[in-house]
Amino acid sequence: MTRLTGVALRLTVFVGESDIRHHRPLYSEIVHRAHAAGLAGASVFRGIEGFGASSLVHTARLLSLSEDLPVAVVIVDTAERIRAFLPQLDGLVEEGLVTLEECEVIRYVGRSGSKEAE
Image 1: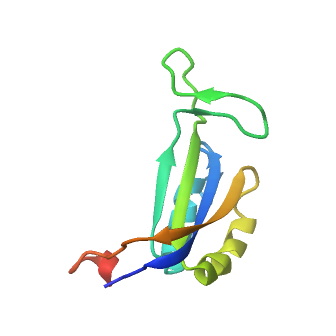
Image 2: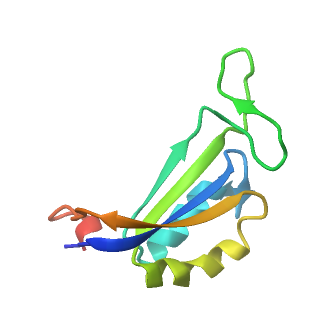
């Protein structure tokens, strides 16, 4: 059963929804690499509006029909495991923002009997 409590590191990678690497969405490539690296977990959040270094505002409003909404990939694990994973982002994230924040994990327990808990 996977358990993680106490001080941890939160890695957040902000990219565009239409960014592609290795024939799949960049956010999906990051999640699959995090999984292969054995990190505790990763989640992808789709933004409804935002802008970045390009200063172009992307929005999900009906009249705008943007196809490149902001996406955040959030991964939380121990500092040493997150820092060991960072080099994998070097060849993937050509445009975007990568942040690290210390956080406190109150409770993280994988489900019994699921692949996640193995």
